[in-house]
Length: 210
Image 1 (tube, rainbow, N blue to C red):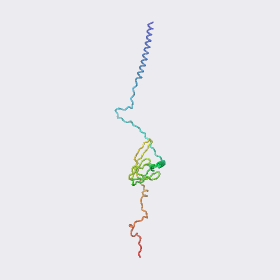
Image 2 (image 1 turned 90 degrees about the vertical axis):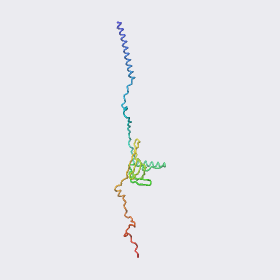
Image 3 (image 1 turned 135 degrees about the vertical axis):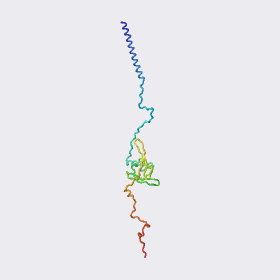
Image 4 (image 1 turned 90 degrees about the horizontal axis):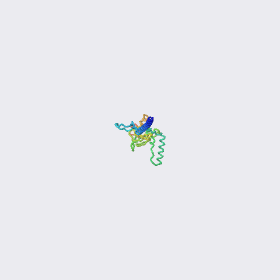
């Protein structure tokens, strides 16, 4: 009987020791797992070392084009600028600064002591102006005057602040058949003919001698 009690006592003690060892083993395993960091996965965006480097493409969002105001608003702006220039005692801007290049019609080109000059008509207001190279307009500037055309530099403004420049050429206006006929010079009926061109029969008779 005593042997059974002794065996049960040692068996219970062994069971407790075993449970303690198992608990300690689980604790150590959890600490080891916490200490070991998982290996970071390789990024799919990593560059291939054997591939030539290419700069990333940047998508530039272009803004819309800024539309010019109406001719009435531009004329009002020009008048305000003219008054401000007069008050400041500086040169006032020219009326052409209120005109768009698309509103110009080239009527004629001539040569002056200052060089080539062009006569243009503002189609919205039906007024004509004489312009020279360097003349500024609302959306551009006159660069050169040639024999039968004008060369402009157009400026386009966008909502994001960008400004683009391009070359625009305007040809001399071609006269239609009606304008050609009206511009043809015809001699009037009452033109006096020179005396040297008169025939002897057409000369007035001289005084009759007594």
